[in-house]
View 1 (cartoon, helix red, strand yellow):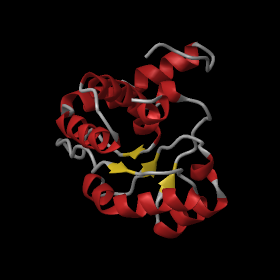
View 2: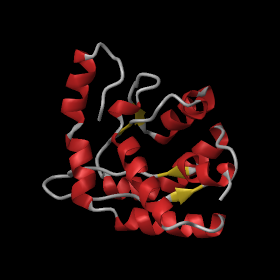
View 3: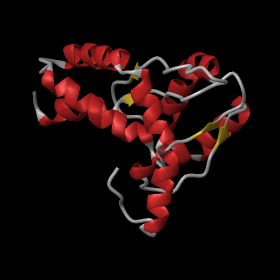
View 4: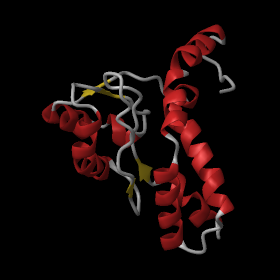
Length: 163
């Protein structure tokens, strides 16, 4: 697979997962795979498509955690979130150490590469299988590590931490 195709999966997938709602893990959302660039309008469409899954996982009000990609911080996206009734938390730029989904992407990438997809359709199918097979307990452990991540980041004065 070429370099462009091999990097396709990382930058074109959207998903969400949570830890506990009450005492039960609600799990993970549907996986949304997008072809092409993700601009503000595309991101808003993804968020619209994901709304049902998000409301199932988070029946109470939630705050979106997202990085500072241009499509996330644009005026139109900020307005879309406000109009849709979603809160968005402030989040420092370039903070992958603090986002548990980055660890999940890493694990998924390793699993996908083991299966050696032959084309983009095969790649998308494999990504979906890998996502669906992810263990809920592993996802919960990534979320529960947040307190320790934040502590280590503070101790490192905001520098990169190993997590």
